[in-house]
Length: 363
Ligand SMILES: [Cu+2]
Image (cartoon, rainbow, N blue to C red):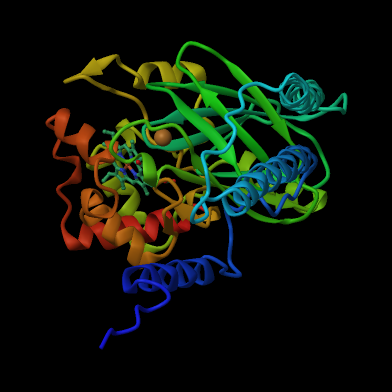
């Protein structure tokens, strides 16, 4: 007796189930880096263009695969059939399938170029200026009009265009906030520009989008879009000098901060001036660029640190100071301190808790 063959081979069934599962788990409600959830005009026009191209491609796919399947079924060999007539060339058809794609691609090219020009410059005359400086592996943000320097978190007012200039102090990075704008390369010795506007308040996740070394995947950042009044308050607080600790642990932490040489790479008095930056960026050592670390003047006002991979809390900070390499493999804080042959990072537990208290007092 012959066993009936199953309709589908087992491996195909298993593969189908697995891909269905994968499809289902990818539909998570939390999608902080989804480009399908545009929150501003730049990402919205990019998304619109994407949909035009997507539907056009889907149309082409359906027509081509439909014609293919139809031919396969309709013209397959039947028993006792003689050799079918062999045809070659059909002028009308060939003209049709040359002209149709050319028209389609032409239309897409026109729309793409139009969008590119539209998004070249911010539409308003008075955008907020932010200078972004990329480092292996964190982003620094400077507000030149306000003399404010911060890191990892870029605050912007809702509803106002923000014009970015992008510089790198080491290798090529890429600045990308999926819900607000597309990618723009950040290239050493070249100043690129981009802009976006957030139409709603919220925290938008950003990510370096150009492979830039070992901790590239851990080079994230956040855009904090605030109502204009809140943003003004934030600016005013950032412009104020660092708080001087008065209470025990924080005061002790301030002493450790200078004694352990943290001050060599980190500012805690105000914005980084160009002169200060230059004095801290001293060429290369062992092939690694020697540059400064994030400005810590208002460190505790930021919700995240170390390329926005850590939430700012006492435990995470202590873990970072105990062993930065464990928290963010490859980071330049432990590497550079080691290259300096600097004992900066040999901290006792009491140093660490004092430093945590000090850093958390820097609101
Ligand atoms: Cu990168």
